[in-house]
Image (cartoon, rainbow, N blue to C red):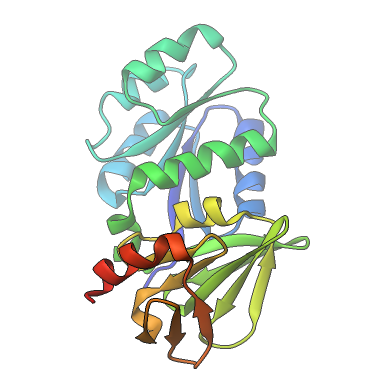
Length: 231
């Protein structure tokens, strides 16, 4: 099964497409196809149904507003343009975000994460969901099914894997939680999120996972956890 996010970028400026390609490589876990011809890009999108489209506005002969209005209804897209006065039009067309050129990697990453939330957990799960996090200077792609639990530390998080070992990232627990399918994970403590399918036994004080790791349940979470897990 596929594990990457399928993206399309449409822009008639080669430099702009190169920047998007570079930023996608830095994020990792993305399959990107680029088009300088808007109509060719539109036809590809209608056939291949990518998860996300980066769409320039100022293009000839068909601008990005024209293309956006003809995208399949479920298509998630982000406008990229040098012209601020198009912003309102972009939001009227239900764009996820609006990147004003030239944009920094941090701004691109924020827009991409916003798009992931819009895309929805079910669509991502259907293609074999991974999450991508940064450890030191490397992007690490982790299958969601391989996550046992996540522990928040001061200023970073530790992602413990069923296959062994852990990944340490500076992404905070709240941000990681937004990337996970909520039906498959539960927060049991201010410092812990666990995979429901990896729970072996539990009581009001703690959860034991299939690897025999024991995770405490926070006092304020106990009643909700008992209700959620059926006890």
